[in-house]
Image (cartoon, rainbow, N blue to C red):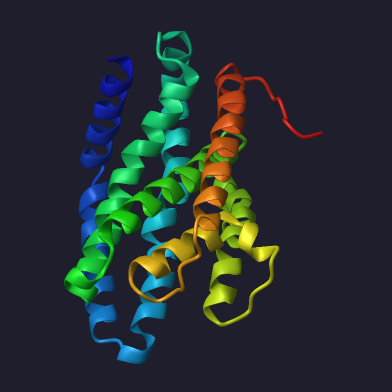
Length: 234
């Protein structure tokens, strides 16, 4: 009940600040551009667009959300509330996952109609969005301002999105397959008929990254809310 209440409040907060309306507008623009894209490039372009925008949007939004809550003193409230740290983290990530999934499904539906595997797409984007949002939340807990967050969030964003973009251009390496962005890109690509079936490996990689990022976030966020400058890696 605590978690559902927190999730409802997070979604209401995002509605109030126009997150859903903004991404519905952006999704329409993407859908129009991809619809008129030449057929030979449509699947490749769509897989990259869905990966680098709807699936990763939480990584950028969560920084502003965290810093706004911090500025309003809400972290003191969360610190003493009965809501567990993991419930707080999952509430934040899931509320942004809804936007990611709605945007990704809308884009793919407009471009590919009924030929895509929407179940695979939805589950993949859901898992990937949670990973990227959790990473963004961890990074945000070290940020001093929005500008500082954008600065320190850029390296991990590049690190996780460049490998799948290289893959889209035919540049692959076994190490690059271990990145969550590459695994998600494989899943997105397969759901729209672009990439070959990677079997269970991409899903396994996503689940490992999801467990790892939630574990680290669960260790870091309570310390950040207490104002402790605790670095997990020395």
